Image (tube, rainbow, N blue to C red; front, side, top):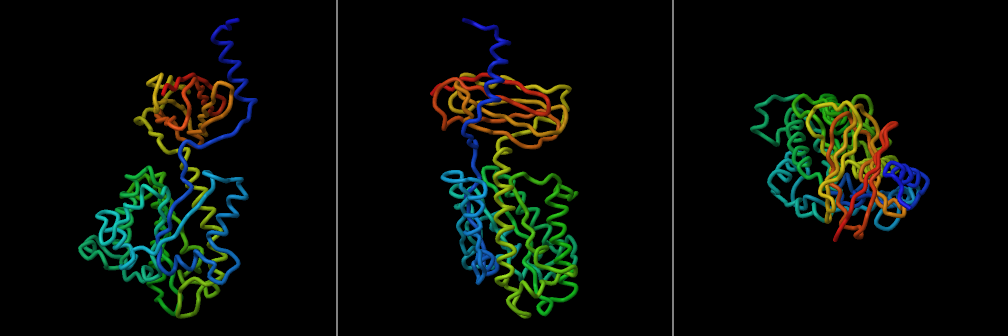
Length: 362
């Protein structure tokens, strides 16, 4: 018996709402590499504490029910091997792969996490534009210049998720009031201005970059490293207390945001026009192999969820599931891991729901 198309569509919507099968992410950002020197090695742990980053990753997977390809993992590497890891060095590494090549790690590590050690907190002055002629000069102006260039390079690699740490702090005995204040100001700018897209020079901050502010976690209001987190008055290396504090926060923050990026990967906003109504367009090409383009529009900001189901109602992919501002969007859906056949994709946002059919032919 043949049903009218409208009735058939309604039946499919009802079917998709009541069946709750296994889910899978279209693109996984759950494994990577941490590039560090001694300060990062202390936080990696266990460093005399009862935990470590590997232990916290195990705990994270257990809490979220992640296993197999969905489990979060990360390895660590001393890098650069033969040079310092201050911001001037990271600037040249990201722009020229000198003095050491980091881009060779990009294809095999979805997450790339970098940091600088506590010597970067010995900032000498606010600075001015001429400072860029001396890249190693530690001024707030130069540091902002370095970070804008580093993050710009990160933005060109949406197939990776990047994490960049703020400065590791210095103890009161190892710094000056001016240096501590300037470090606090720079790290606050990095987290509260640059990362929020409020820097007038840089503008919108990329979705594939996350700023991890270790500085604010270990310092007092003056920018000094708190004594309870330092190895000693004259040794700013994080101690066991610092590891126990930071390792869980690092794992939670990094993987919460990298997994959140999975639902944004591949989404592009089309222009600045605001549509009058919600809409979900027919994918193109259709039939397709293995990728197809899906366009949708939302007239007001909100959570947009796009779910792909097979013919018997099993959820096979959730390529979009995130907050988006009002606008017209396009998304490239990669079905290379799916078998040939008919699929349905369902979009929900607010009270709006629509379902369309597509065919994968391999």
